[in-house]
Image 1: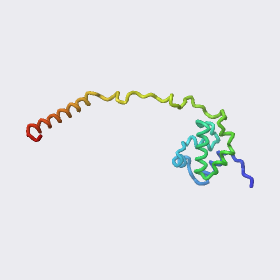
Image 2 (image 1 turned 90 degrees about the horizontal axis):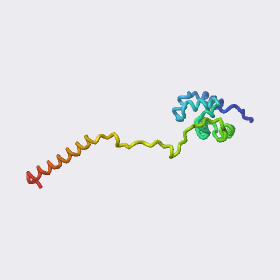
Image 3 (image 1 turned 180 degrees about the vertical axis):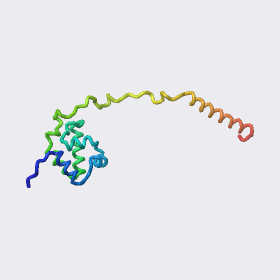
Length: 138
């Protein structure tokens, strides 16, 4: 039996229609954003962040729809290759050196109310101790 070489997106869209699911329903179940699902169905995987995300989303979507994910990836290997320059490049580099440095978390804490509570606590403890001494409990 000869397999038809339909574009990948058509296979996904056809299969999704066969089981009567909307893109929103697929998004809710797979947690893949609808824009990425549309990109897969419209054969615009190069608009995704990277080939790694594209491959992962395609595999997850195919698995959800009951399509052989390894076969889909093999058929579209050239489109999903990491050397493919058509993938959208992100200008930001996500590494440890680029993490945002946040300010001191205690910076906005007001010291006066805290000092008042500490002072009141000390006064209460001393008053309790004095009352205990006065009543000859200790």
